[in-house]
Length: 474
Image (cartoon, rainbow, N blue to C red):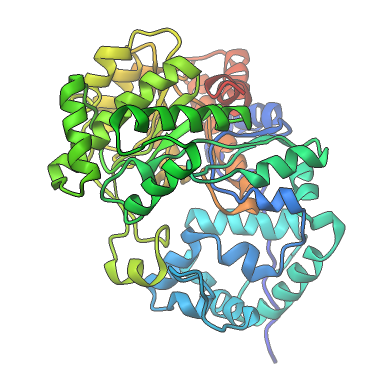
């Protein structure tokens, strides 16, 4: 006989402390935040979903193809991305039956045991689709059919799910070259969901970006500025930032390899830019130009009020062959050691004391939490800490973040949580994990008589809801 599938359950006490006293406190704190609306101030979801409100195609297209957390694990175990239907760099795809791709994933779901992806996916399966047996080889078709059939109903269209998840606001991330047509369509539709954009200028700021020459030409065409002239180039950025702000943006985002900043004299900046646009920039020139542009972006933020985010410390596209075949953001990005104390000083010397400037810094280098980032945020008025990010947005990473930053930065020099995901349906799961971990951390402080419970309850609400709204001017 074939054994019956094992049940899929979500324990209501998951991620809470095992100590009975702390667990009871965590439950009470969690009750204060579990029903709060979701503030998603930074992410990479596709605005076309809400612009068109078209049904998602199938389980594979929704849950597997956009989620590099998932397919990077499968790739590490020998599954080619082509076999999963992951797009190639030129936009084409291998001819793959989505059901066959789903079966490949399902047969290997055990690879995710204990990982954040397992938590998020099981939350989606259980809470969103009502599935009550575990995913595996024997239930692959059951899952595929149940999810794909549900996606064809009105209740699972993008806007309906947005409302069901109680998302108050979500920010996507777009290049300066994006016409933001989907954001305009959302506005024109009359739908009440709030979807805003964020300005991500990497392709026209990073001379080592593979799209830089073509992107710079397009940047000039869109803005009508001479972007090969330093002053015209800066005007083009101001123009596009103003357009993004008019379309709802409250923030910019910068995915630089390091956190280096520079404050060059105007003549030096002009000469550096001339080498960049002439294609004569060395590796050191490219780093210096990125560093100078962070300071230029900070100056513009002081003028237009956009909150500045820096996501540094990542060796992107580490797998050259995979990058050449499938392009960016395919799970081959690896954390790097990152210096913040020296790197940020030029920018902070110029703008760090400005009351109207806000800078949110993320890291993939946990060794900097207590040594650099928390002390910096605990001093500079402009500087706030983004949450544990990417490789560290796991329960253990969130614990470490709170433990190592609390002494110097407190809770209120951080910005709560943002999900930073392309996987739409995982958003409620990710926020739920963050809320549970924060309640567990706070419960420990209450049990140790370091906080009163009413204070902890207020902090829990601030972390889940008020701080991200305030930090991102939402």
